[in-house]
Length: 157
Length: 71
Image 1 (cartoon, rainbow over the protein chains, first blue to last red):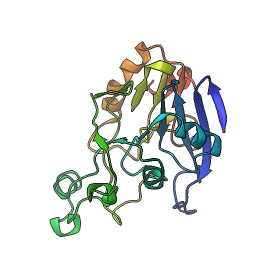
Image 2: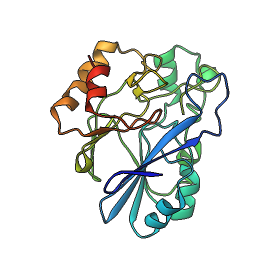
Image 3: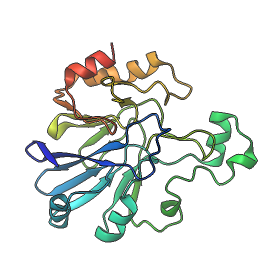
Image 4: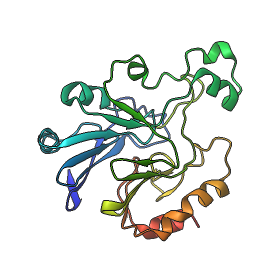
């Protein structure tokens, strides 16, 4: 883990779902930002012990940049009881409209964050481009806020 | 794509990635939006006091890299 500036950390870890066929490198990046009261964990994977210790002393929050960047979020939520800010995964209707797949194939919507949608995740705040989150974050539009259902195209995670 | 003013950071998720060629718009990710539309949506970031770009794929980089990616 490396502190890029005071209160801003970066680390990398091999993604457990990576295969040699992926377009993206095996190691992915995660970040933590500490403002002295709140610790924000971005797309967390293999959070270093020193960051976890800090999280225990802070009002910690997990922020996902995409619903398919879940990584170690579920275990962190279960372990620390932290709230989450995350863009919502695609519904079945979204998948049909955006990608032209059949309703049968889209049934159930995106599998991303299914545990959260099932109510197993505690406090969650859904956000979208244009939102100002009450944790000092502004969301801008990107290339996508969605992913595809499994099997139609692999997503970067 | 997230802007965190307290540290002057952009966290671009999968919209801007470095797969080994430097920071760039993730052409593969775009869904029903053109590259120009992505650039247009992100150009306001360049007017902010941006110090660092923190991609999910790739290492932290700087404002100049974002300028090149959006050029």
